[in-house]
Image (cartoon, rainbow, N blue to C red; front, side, top):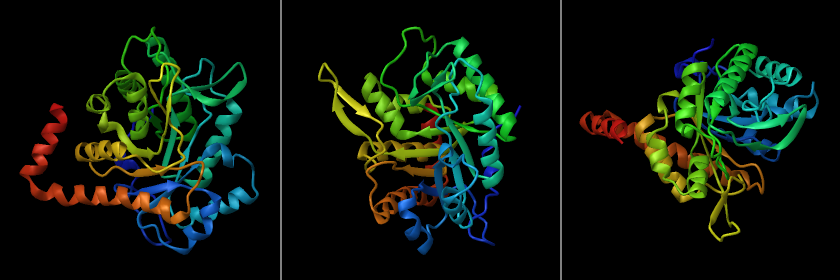
Length: 314
């Protein structure tokens, strides 16, 4: 069984000849529309994330473009169709293609969602929620083992954004995620926007959720924008849309997380209604300033120690 170690990913390379330590990396989603701008300038200590399923063909333009980015920066492979939480065994063909991508690009991070998206050989264009039960946990851990065995390294499991909850759940989401990481030896991808979206949709506290989240297992953080709607009862309904800037409330939660977890590699997700590259880059620079402010404060000894104690006591 693979065991997650945050230090195990610190070997990724950036520009030829320059080591890129992952602690403190800040990146963005990679979109082909931004390629020219990305190659013309340096995103300092940057990395770029792609959805693995967009690169599962054997060759062609997608791979030429991604190879050009990979020559300069670490990349993150983010899966959206593995169906880690599904009832069936993982699709062998899909898993093989994913394994080939990992071998081809040697990504800094490999991640998948705590969700299901296929059943009986049919794939759905969505990330669907799970009941948090012992039976589901066993299945999720089996699938994580299967994936990690195939790719030969630990993966990161991402917390979901949810819009419904199962009455059959016997444990909280954070309890479930902690147990999955401990049993399967994987790391975690903490999506702070997902935490906020789910908290608003279900009427609970995002701060309380994060206080119970196993931050020691977090190897990467996601930040993204969300849209605001109203449900049939006119209650607030947030959608994890990835189509706008990170909200102020999410930035506040992110600062709290970094104060407790330290400078975890952070990625800005933006998948539709794309802005010009300078706007997306500016979001990454905001995350970098937060990481830098944390790094500047930590050497103060007693202040840093008080922060650590407050995190553990929260």
